[in-house]
Length: 137
Image (tube, rainbow, N blue to C red; front, side, top):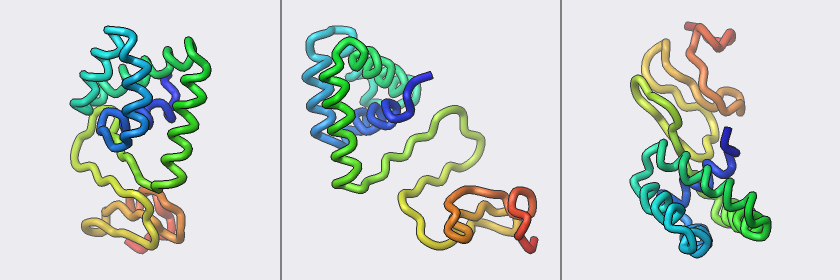
């Protein structure tokens, strides 16, 4: 299983939402034709290509500890400075997907069987009446 942090980094690089990370990974992968191909293919942001990119990031980290330190330090810095959210959906989705960054308060979507987010400062998703015993529905 690929490190979830590397999946997040790969998603951000694929979305080109973090220029510093894109530059760091591009410089590293520029030396290897396969890695260049994987990086280029990830631009479509399909889950399989992002996972493949995360796998190549893991391999690059393993082979070059300094690159791994730089990659994670840059990710940590970006996460601290920008406070952005990169949402990714992994796996097959049947129905709708709702993505959000920081949620403060409650969000209710739909009718009595809706998903409730942020109930009592506990960010999560529950189906009312099934997973939320405090529900009145």
